[in-house]
Length: 182
Image (cartoon, rainbow, N blue to C red):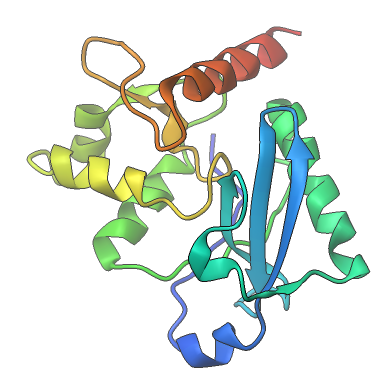
């Protein structure tokens, strides 16, 4: 299964900084915050998506306008029904290293309801000894759930760590599995 989500490394951080907008909203997994701004695909590419209230570095960003309501609806549709994984095209903007780009690109190829180990993913991106670095790239994933670092588990099959807690990771994986069986 190939992914249809797009992202690209952005080069002009100053230009982007002046276009950022923020919104906090409720999802089936709890409160989330999305930061959008100028990007490659649209004026409202997703730069950050995470659980909880805005991080300190995002607290001075202006609130989203009403036109961004559709984006939040699409994020919620994606979270509620992972079966639409290939149909939905959420615009993602990402700014990171080449290694992080390789990791996040690969994560996008792991379909809902499936998991892979850190070692499998490191090997798949051609860096079998970079398991720890891969884990760090997952931990620093700026776009929760949409770039599915929650689909990566430990070699023994156990859940492992998750930036927002192992209980939430388990809940997300169970939800994806349940939705795919319906």
